[in-house]
Image 1 (tube, rainbow, N blue to C red):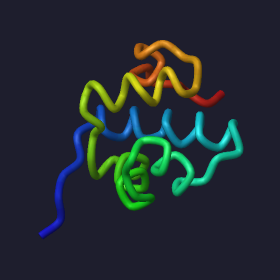
Image 2 (image 1 turned 90 degrees about the vertical axis):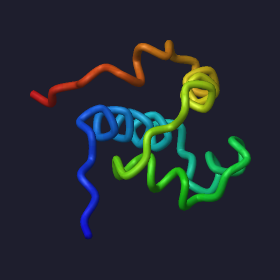
Image 3 (image 1 turned 60 degrees about the horizontal axis):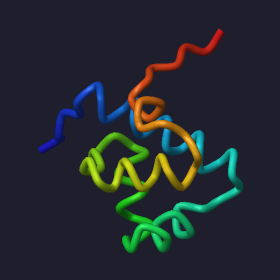
Length: 77
């Protein structure tokens, strides 16, 4: 059974991936920082899971961005 992903999951996941890659971190590195495994970070980035509010806040602080920035949809031009 395939799980439907919420559009927010996709937006937040893409933003986490972008920030992580811009900071030359692997999923394992971010996962270790958060106290989770790389699989959890992969699930966030794929949109399969959405981080809870506290985890999203910790990610935003880690990358020196506002929590709002994790929620913003970016359009490639």
